[in-house]
Image (cartoon, rainbow, N blue to C red):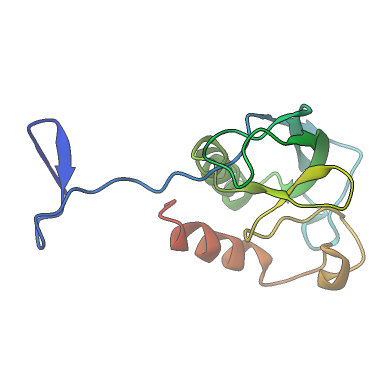
Length: 152
């Protein structure tokens, strides 16, 4: 990519390049370190707890069915607080800021915010079947999923 007159252009095809931007509703991402929660594979490290908070709202013009209400949600995810976990936390923040982690899922009565296609560990136990640890390939898979969305 090269900047030409303020726009990013692809050097090979000379087309304008626009970074991927999702249609995620406005929300807030926070993280904290918890010394009491231990991830089985990473028990010598503390745990990073990620919270994603979305308030109730109205679908924007960029969403399917604009003007319809959706319900707010709170999501919690976990990463080991080590070098790789910290790097992935930064990448998740980039993906969140670009609107790539969540979407609006239609429900029978009231639509709701829901995960998109980037895996999160929502439990520190129980294995991959319930989005938990242990899952030896998770951090590598998460990095690949983020890279596939242009988050590196």
